[in-house]
Length: 231
Image (cartoon, rainbow, N blue to C red; front, top):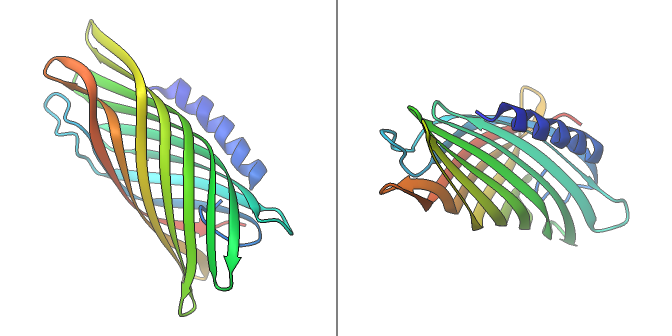
């Protein structure tokens, strides 16, 4: 596992998150800081004797600040997911504009995004490192008295993929795209303002070692989590 790179990224991301101090597609004025915990299922290309499908835990920390009197907000989030075969860290820093239409809010923006993936199976390991830009669009509305968010994302990355198995290694660099959909709704759990999050992310390009060669294949990531409002 790439622990040193993980902790360096974690330190930078946490500092930026606290400084911005996010909830994607949220049209709420002012600032918000939240933490999340949930279950995720990365459905990755097979590696060795592993099917690539696994189930594990994902945690996150996020925040946003919307400038008073303006439609622009800044937001950041960091997420860490782990299963018995896969480890992932993701960091986003986004600038977003929101347009209000009564009880409805439309938002769009873009910013920096990175993901580091480590997939292991026996003595084989594949790293998929993404760095680039993310474009987002969101719609917030109210059903009854319950706010509901729909958030869409498009990731445009440089993908560095590497494979190691004993003394054998290979590497490539290529352009990659990802697509994401998140659905959120607010509720109160034990007196704490909370938000249920259901997400699907499609990675059109993911490093894969198949037929004796390192290349790319697609992958799907399913997430179900709960966000808790800290501030």
